[in-house]
Length: 188
Image: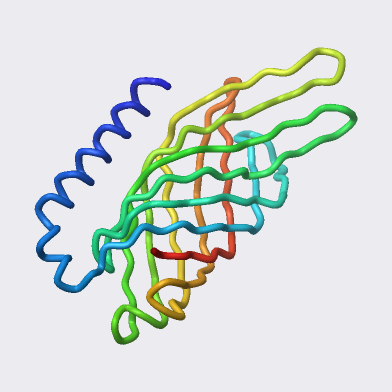
């Protein structure tokens, strides 16, 4: 784990501890603190800088975290952005990350239609395998951002459509993943 990732994890943990320490009594009255897990599946559009083409592939991921109140959460995630292969050669992009989430519900009691946004840091892994030569991995840490819109059917379950923008540096090039997913979130 590189220094940037360690610093991010430490900062998020400290923020989570300080937020929960100062807010426990305020949130205990309405019982709004919830752990959550969300599964996502959709499509990634992978692009490499200075190349005119792009590649679309199935993306899937899992996110989890804690809602400190109905409008603010800390999250961690893993996403597989997809892979591409041709004539025995292949490339794959995946990432792990941590960040914060902001959410606004428009229904009564934090239910119904909502919009959200998220941002943080991601550690991306790009794996390349060349036929007859071998394989190699490259890693980079970059910021990520995302937005979503959905519907909370109950206090415990909601669904959303999400768009995320992620970047990675690999083997001297710059990769971009633009991902559109459908997610289901369970809160407990």
